[in-house]
Length: 170
Image: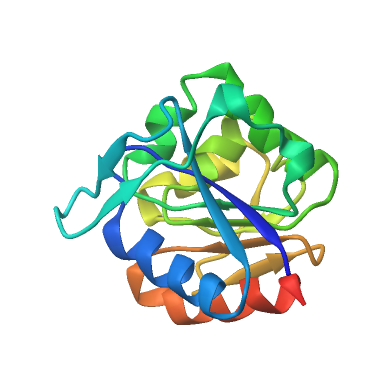
């Protein structure tokens, strides 16, 4: 089964982490949460979920993971301010490893300059940002590009997002 890196910090969209992570783990995949501080607890913006951080960004290498999961909310916008997270995400895109980004998740990939020429979606408020980054933006519940990148717009899209993400992990 796959080892999935999940970059996350406080103010993530609760269900955009909890529902896909639960599905990944139920299918036998290992999800490792990564932030600045190992052992720290981060909370969702709705206050419904808290997540224990498994590893610090300084303790991990992208080469040790098979896929990258980026939940939405404000978390990706915060993380993209740190070059360590930008380079971490860039590795997965450059190496054609599966990347799952929902809602505002693509913001980290925009900063990593890895979306140009790709088909993707994201929350409506970042659609223009994605277009400026060279994305062929699609207003659809899920978009799969090059059998590598899975993107979705919002919590309502989680079932389709999770289904396509799990398909790539097979």
